[in-house]
Length: 275
Ligand code: COA
Image 1: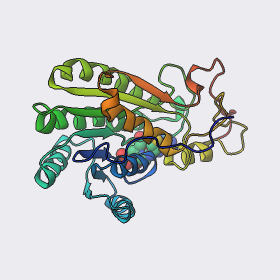
Image 2 (image 1 turned 135 degrees about the horizontal axis):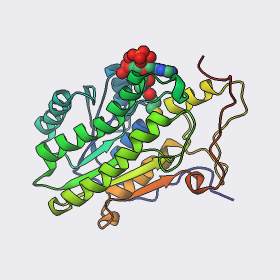
Image 3 (image 1 turned 120 degrees about the vertical axis):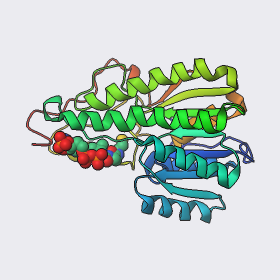
Image 4 (image 1 turned 90 degrees about the horizontal axis):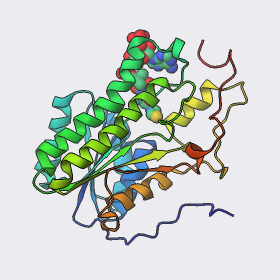
């Protein structure tokens, strides 16, 4: 039988002295990543478009004794991204870990995605990852090294109904992951990706459930278990740890083998979801 809860086997002081920036760290998977990296000694910066959810997350993390910096930005705006990275450097003088977690998604069939809707998701997911990675490299990591982890999605190598925009953007994220790993390896920077499958208690799952209400579509994987945000966070922790010192340009799917299953992802019945 699979273990019912994720188990944290890492040393408590694994990231002591380091600074981590988790984009979109106020909610869902990002919040869990911030928590797990913070619990292992990292000082944490979180930022998103909604300052209030980041403040709420920060209060919770501070309650656990984690040092947290909150800022507000849109990953689509390079000048805002640079300002946030400068703010982290002004506060702590270093940035060791960047987790590109901020993402936008809405489930819709291609015919219901407007040109601007497709562009918005690509702008947030792909260009946002580029903007944040470039700022982290130029301003903080070029001479000191570091770790970048890109949160992608466990379906970019296959067709997935209602996710054309996200799958296209996340495929780009994985391509960028590999190229950044190659170009920045000589600078002591490792760049990896994590592909979450269906993960409970996230905005993405909420939107998916609402969209397929009334149909029998549901996320599935051979292990029959929905991931917890902590499953994703612990994988990120491994990747930024010295245990993974020679792992770069790779992506790990945390999805109960869903992405390698021969079964197709669920296809919502025609007539369900957005009108
Ligand atoms: N179905 C179809 N189109 C939709 C949509 C939906 N459910 N939600 C948004 N859109 C379209 C809008 O109509 C708009 O297109 P239009 O100008 O042609 O009308 C376009 O997408 C942009 O929407 P807007 O709300 O103006 O953009 P935004 O930049 O404020 O929001 C989104 C970006 C669309 C990705 C939004 O869903 C978002 O903010 N998501 C963040 C949270 C999130 O998605 N979390 C889950 C991560 S897995």
